[in-house]
Image (cartoon, rainbow, N blue to C red; front, side):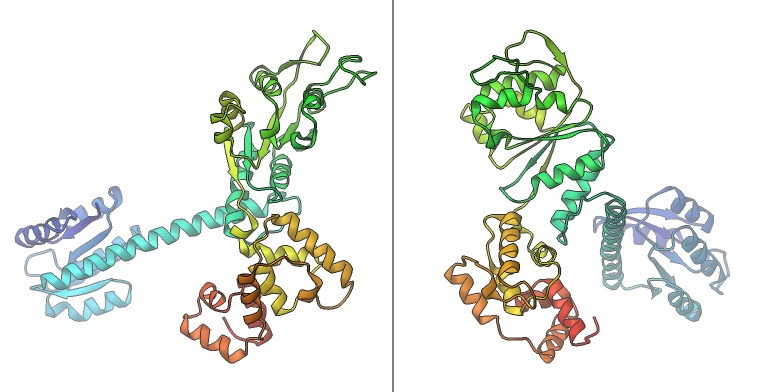
Length: 445
C-alpha cells in the first residue's frame, strides 16, 4: 500500500484529507509542522507528499511552505509533492512547480481532482521506480558482461544476455550447473564461458560427449580402465575425471549415460571417489561438473532411465538455452560473424530471419560456410544459401524482397513514435537491419 504524507497545521484539514485518501486504499501519515514532516520523510518510505504553504498563525506569505519544499527535495529529489495553497500564495506555488513540484491545488480543494492527481502521481512513481530498477540491473549486467571473458560468443538478444549474466554469476561458485536446450544451440560454449570466468580458469577443462560414445565405453571414458579390464584394452587408460582433477569436467548429452554409469557418477559427485574399471584401488579427485542435455530429464526419470538423485546433484543451477528461433535478434549478427561481415542482400536477411533453424546455431554456421564457399567475394545473395524453407516462409520471403524506401521508413518511424522494435516488426526485419537502413538513408533516430 502506498503511503502518503499530509503536512498541515490545521487538524480539520488533516482529518478531511486522511479520510478521503484512506477510503481509497492509501496509507496516510500526518504532520502538523515542517520538522515533523522532515522526520517522517527521513525514516519512512513515503510515495507522495501533500503539503500546506503556511504553518504559523497569521502567516500567509508561503515562505514556510517554500522552505519545506526545498528541504524535502534535498532529502529525496524524486519525491512527488502536491502543494495546497491559498490564492495569496499562488505566485510562490507556480515558482515551486517550475522547481519540480508535481502540482498545486487551491483551498478548498476538489476531491475528484485531488484523487486523480494523487493516483496519477503514484502510478508514475511506480513506473519510474521500475524503470530505475531495470536500468540499474541493466547497468550491472552490462558491467558484468563487459568485464567477462565470453570466449568469442556473438549475441544481441536479451534472452542470451540473461543467460550470460547468470552464467557469469554462477561461474565464481563451485556449484554444479546443468545446461539444457536443443542440439546446436551453443550449450558447450556456455560451459566454456563458465570455465573461463571461474576460479578454475587456469585449470583443466575436459569435455566428454556421452552421446558420441558406445554405452560399454562410457564408464571407461569417465573413470579409466586397467589393462585387460575389457576386450581390446592392452594398457592402462586414464579416465576423464582423473584428467580433470583440480579443474572442470563438461559432460555433454548427460541423458545418454547408462544407469550403471549414472550410479558411479553419483558416487564421485558425492564423495569424489571412484575406481577404474578392473581395479579395486579407490581414487579421489576434486572436480567441478558442468553437464548439458537436450533431453527432458523429468520424462527420463519417470521412465526409469535417469536417476532422480543424480539429477538433483547435477542441477544445482540450471541454465536453459533457448533455440535460435526463439532469439531472432541473434540471427543476423551471427550470420555476419560467420561470413566475416560481408554484406547481405535485403531478401537474404528476410529469409534468414524467416527460417525456423531447426539445427540452431550449428545449422546457421554451416549454411554460412556453404554460402561463403559458393560466393567467395562480394554481396551474399539468397541463392547462395541452401535454406529448406516452408511454403509459408517462402511466401513471406518473396513478399518482402522489395527494397523499402526512405519515405516508408520515415512514415513508420512517425507512426510508431520512433520505437525501433515496432518499426522493425512492421517491415519484418531485425532491429539491426533497420538500424543499417536508418544509417543508409541518414534518418535520425
